Picture 1 (tube, helix red, strand yellow):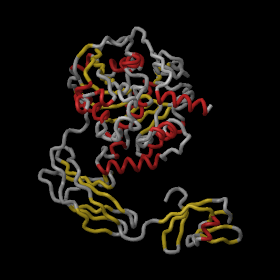
Picture 2 (cartoon, helix red, strand yellow; picture 1 turned 60 degrees about the vertical axis):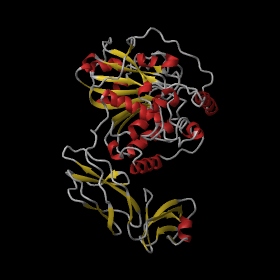
Picture 3 (tube, helix red, strand yellow; picture 1 turned 30 degrees about the vertical axis):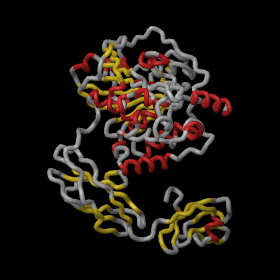
Picture 4 (tube, rainbow, N blue to C red; picture 1 turned 90 degrees about the vertical axis):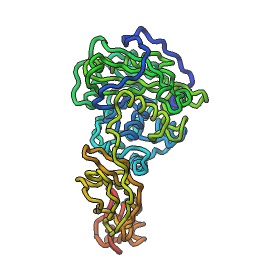
Length: 494
């Protein structure tokens, strides 16, 4: 099974043996040429399948100030590919290579937020995230999808994970044209009477009205070159045309915006309007005040993207998972043109003069220059806001830290409307005292190194005398040093 899985994965990745799909007469309206007009957008969300699922995750993480939640069919954790095709194939779709642990990807996310290349990670805390993976899906290994769930949960997101369906690798809707277990064009399956789209929207929005039986909105076909960096969508492996479905009531009233990102072999130039027709989003859009944006990727002239996938492994740009990623920028430009985009622009300058005024073994003291017009300030440690209440002065002490550890700090000014400025230039501070030492080894090795001692065939942590089990090489523990000669068990984390 794994050998067949590998062949399926390789064929999918390099675009072998693809058969075009000829769409049947679609229920989705015929597209009308137009532009992206400004609407009253109450909240922006993103969803996607496969490469579109990876892109949906990248958009949600990098632009967490824009997107309030995500629905993802079959994908892995943020930047698991690490800008490498082999890693994408064998550690982010399959498990032949060692996967990057979700905890490491969470730290990578925090580091990037601290550097300002993605939005602050605290935005993700509490965000609704809906995940789906079918038991017949042999394109994305279940463990890879599990990593995505763990990644989001570790960042505090509100995750619902449906992984019990018998679906193949596909978007699943009540009007999908493929059998439930299929993995074939146009990659929209029907699994009995289930409605995963309703499940997704209910988790993201709270409640949803029943889907419309017929559509009354309009499908606008627009030029994606307008929103691509440099004005050339083709140069970043995006199609000329994008689409947006706008219900009648959204012409003059407040509506949510859902960005629906197709998967590989699912772009308009290959399957026509099949994804837009069968995804079952337009039916819910008409009854739930929701505009649906369908951006379009395409194959690349350089041959690096033969499947028309979105860039989640670096085929187009090494910046692909960052706010500066060209495809990411293009999609967010579309969102902003429609009236989405999250918080209003900052009106205050970033604070200047941030400096470290003192350190202890558990705290760091900071000060900065006052910003005219600021009502308060937010302090960020390693990309995450640390003050639980407004800081009204120009100094702050961060406490409860680990000894001998280096932290990075920035500060933002906040005006009376609650809008934060850009963040200050970062400073680093290292707390005093020795850094935490943790060692994982078997009981015999711990005793030889003096971290534990043996008595009566049993092993005990030195100093704390905590029992560690039999004195042998089979039992492994992690010990944390809390004093010069004191060690404690730290199997649950150091």
